[in-house]
Image (cartoon, rainbow, N blue to C red):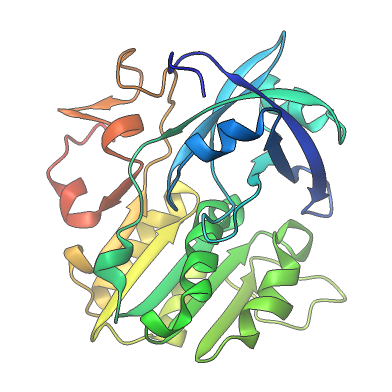
Length: 279
């Protein structure tokens, strides 16, 4: 691993999975070209890495894989701009740059022995996927697990194999999926995530809730959780801010006395309450 935190290390895309019907979200499995670099890349669920498309640019992406399954890294990327567009044009075997990991992580130690409620929307399930698989790989250390997820349409759902096949197989693990608007083939619930969450109504007793998704969804999910009796220190979320350097030097992700790329992206709601309104 390069001693310079700003220098990307060469890696190879070994597998590409199209997650959505439109193909606007793809998961890239990546392996370092130098095997010794993998040993130095020690990450935790919730952290991010900077991906470089040579000749185009770089962008910060949540690590979607879990450290409990070593040997590769995975990044689920939505096509939203110049760098992500170029990444979506890549093929298996292509080279990219990778540096990191950056940021803090989900507080797994705090979660042990607790019931866990995961609330995701759209591509916001990507960072939660790392945490969910980490928890399920250590299933006996946690209580009941509820996974509540929604997308705009059935075609926009991501990680469908895990949602409908893999995750429900685990003991005392319950998966609920809704869409804003269904189609002729969709037989599941239709509606927005916050009211669906209230309908399921997972108990706040001995629980920790983790949510990630579009900002407007998070806003109303937080209101729903408060209505259901969850306190601010029981709720964890992530901030999606523009992170340019990854090491707290450029100031692009500064909020008050915090830098999202260093102090985040994971925050409890009581921590967010202490930040300026600019976030």
